[in-house]
Length: 196
Length: 196
Image 1 (cartoon, rainbow over the protein chains, first blue to last red):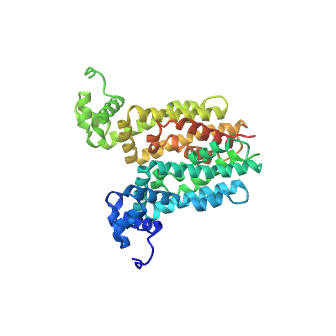
Image 2 (cartoon, helix red, strand yellow):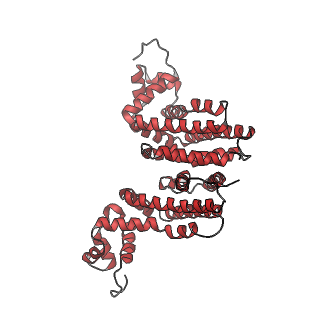
Image 3 (spheres, chains in turn red, cyan):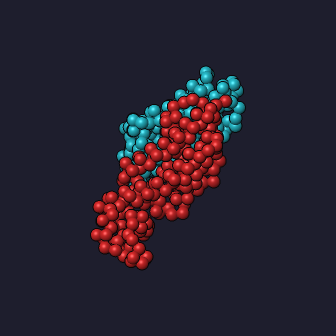
């Protein structure tokens, strides 16, 4: 427990909520548990998150957004679009696998929360497809990729790689076949994009 | 119930087993239920299927194989490989959707059986990838597709279209977005195969 003079920030509350979810699961975890973990009153938590629902939504959004920053940097980097696309997909797959593998129970908890907050999950997917669209647009602009509807292509790339990022497939991600399967799908998709 | 002189064939037993599974679910259905539905002794059923496990495996294999024939005809037909590939994927997706939509409970039952008999499910996937490989090979032979490892490509096509045939995605198949999503993925994959 941090010293009491540490200011109670939303970030600290969200971290404590993650710990509480990890310990009790989404069905049992309460705002009182979070407050207790922080050594504050539950009123102090409510000053930052007006309800248990708001707190759950924030923690789900944070979980889903954890990949956004590194992926966004890749999407906006310099260099060949094909390399960036492959790097982006690899980074996403590695992050998902790590999350599902290191802490499968917390992963299941978050999956349940994301299903519950389907609007937040939908917004996450839109952000991901937006980043893929950015890469496709830059590849078209540089002449590396053939001309095509960048947005529809971003979505098609997301859908065609579902097996490597959709949590319903998590039980298969430890399969040794997954790496060559991922490489083959990437290669086929890049061949579809490349101007020849 | 058919007249008693109708010979008891494996096909008739499997049909009765499907009815029984539909009614009682995989946990409760027994060989005695199947025999009763056929108006025969359970000994007569055991003469064709030596155990409940053998009967469940046979009914799972039959269910998984139902698409094989029409798909196999498409894979081996004449004409441009790109058209056949699109036709094959569309036919598969339509068949899966039909199965999941018409009779969701039986679909869940079969999904449970297929998970239980993972070797039979794996064999089914091998057959499907084999048919995709046949289409890719013929496209390469005719010069329509660029030269590539046909087998690895067949597998990549299977993996990249998982969202449109893997039963874990069944809850999303009624989504109106699925048709344009399928079309966009198909187009991207075909662009990857085509010799330009």
